[in-house]
Amino acid sequence: MEGRATTEYNAGIMKTRMKSPKQSAKAKPKAAYTSPERLQKIFSALDQLFPQAQCALQHENAFQLLVATILSAQCTDERVNKVTPGLFQKFSTPQDFAALAQPVLEAEIRSTGFFRNKAKNLIGMAKKLVTDFGGQVPRTMEEMLTLPGVARKTANVVLGTAYGIPTGVVVDTHVFRIAHRLKLSNQKTPEKVEQDLLKLVPPERWISFGHQMIWFGRKVCQARKPLCADCPLESICDARDKTV
Ligand code: SF4
Image 1 (cartoon, protein in one colour):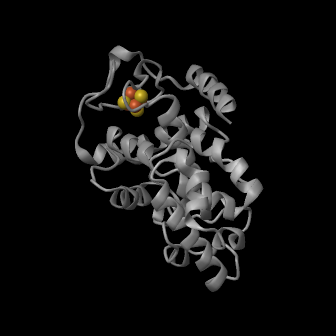
Image 2 (image 1 turned 90 degrees about the vertical axis):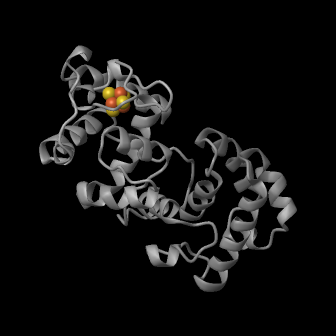
């Protein structure tokens, strides 16, 4: 996935760059940042850069993705992907996790950080799946939010990626940062940023937009040193921390 995304990114850069770095946009009235034309430029650039963006967390079913997404809190997907293959070899079903003693699971997931809380949530989540949902990951946001350790971000990842159900836009640290840099939202919480994005992004793009923004944040609009000189959105971006 990483390699494919890089290739897509490199190919996309050549096609989608619009202006030289010296032609940066100046600050605009607020409504201009969310005009249909500007949004379309953002969607087009993301489509060209990451036409087949997918979730980077390895998984074979909705339950595995739910476990991996809970483990990914405050942790990189790469680290989670190192832990989950061995974990799922030993314990693969909600019933397996529900029967685990917490210290056993803690030892398995220690390297992902916050392991005590994650183990507690994973076991609680698995128990609830077994008792309330017949051992299946539910298919609605309302039901997902009843599971321990599951908030909207995790629910959107699982429902969108595993089931193809567009319940919202995933707002992780990358999406939150880029939404602010592109002035699509100035809200202070991921939940409120998501509500802004839901008004701007058409529902048929909710799932892909989240994946694309996450890859864009990893490969181009990085937290510390965004690669603005190579960014196809440079001409329409006036983020304060631009590097050109
Ligand atoms: S901050 Fe830089 S990399 Fe991010 S969107 Fe703006 S120009 Fe692109």
